Length: 265
Image (cartoon, rainbow, N blue to C red; front, side, top):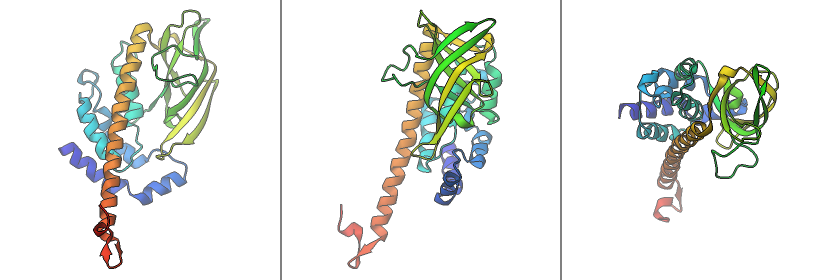
């Protein structure tokens, strides 16, 4: 209840239509002030297990928070960076995960999930057209990813790819500064940002390989499922806000000397 009350207050103060229109007009996705609040209030750590330094919240906790944030159509990286990416890292045995998880929880770092491809339908954990190959003592990634959520503001990508010949699934962390990458960014209908990301033989260190095979497939399925729940919960909040706006309008707007609500069910 305290978390929901706090979220309701933050949405009321920071998610006004005026601020939203100004931000979108500048071509910005995230609201810097609101993003800081998400870190300070622990919302970015809510889904991270306690053993990884997080708050150990359940998906019910996350859904209740996202419903409140959905009322203000917030586009902060709780789902894209924390729930999708940092939580995925928390479920791995990758030795370098702690630094990135902590960075996401504090808001100092952001991650984006580069997974969707042109041939995708419903099999989220199937083999990828993007390939990852051995290149001397490093790994090389080539391919294209579509609509990577918040990619233009991320510090690194969690990229899914397949090994040639075997089609074994792999998840790797690719820093945004790595040479050979190209982003085409755009706004989505809710004012959030996404990008198509192109990898032209991008080299990464062997230590950036996070998971492979059946482990990678399970991590992807869990991460996508959590993101779906979080996104749908935000949608519930947005729909409830729409109903409230319509109800208020019908009570206040008058026609022929009576509120509209008198004429319509």
